[in-house]
Amino acid sequence: MSMINKQDMLKKAYTAFNNRDLETALSLMQVDVVWPKGSDGGYVHGHEGVREYWTQQWAMIDSQVKPIGFKTHADGRVEVNVHQVVRDLAGNLLSEQMVQHIYTLQDGLVRKMEIRKE
Image (cartoon, rainbow, N blue to C red):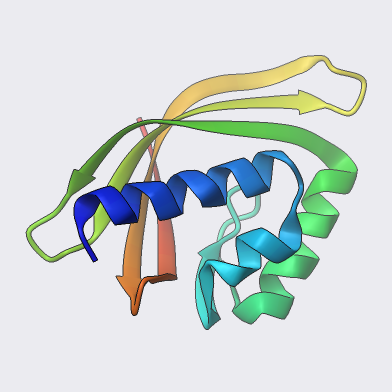
């Protein structure tokens, strides 16, 4: 998978997340994906773990993530610089920051994601 294709796939994933299109987002992940719980720490596993985590998250906060830049590491992982804005459900700003999402891809799908905060 070329870097352009990786970027396109990950951009599609961010768009799906921002649109709360869970099925499209999950279709871009391995069925046994390892996904970080950004607000709680730790990880969830598999499509059902991500589904449950995001459903709970979206019931409490409105987070939007915009990929700004992409970089491929020597080990093949893809680092995405992300502008993240988190609001409460009334629209009040809770946080706005740059974070790094680091993806391990397998067979063109997300196998694992990690979060690094600046």
